Length: 207
Image 1 (cartoon, rainbow, N blue to C red):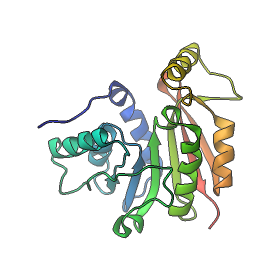
Image 2: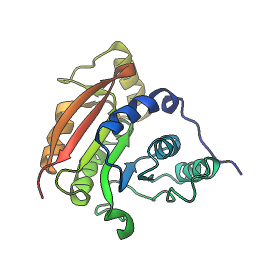
Image 3: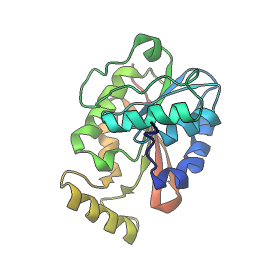
């Protein structure tokens, strides 16, 4: 049975995110994606970067079923691992050693604004424990700058998120980066993306 989910945003942003990734990923090792959702990003990036292994993860069973269906549909079973059942708040993350030893970076796309704030804190804590000095964590999504929305559409989107769950919402970039620093990361780059989004690149700077 085809259990693939289709998220419209993926089709719009995957090429732009891929262009950012192409600047920094190495041609070996593994990328861990936190909060992989439907799995559409995962299979797309696995095909765009065939020299690496793209490891998806998600705490939601329906999402993991979708990821498995996407991997099968794209005939990537021999290349891509099955998705991990990973909740960022359950630290330390349970990642098999055959994967954790080859991680070169972590990617999280459109996750922290649809999760409670503690998930952002846990994301950096977990990443800080897993990554080595010089390795990266990339966040993609909408952010407030100086606690202000950068567009009217982001303001409306933020309100819609809070109607769905009052613990959700577009995060203030400075507060996110403060949590990154506590976990041993520095902010390396802020890249303005289409549709009022950003890619934020963090590097592990402490051992």
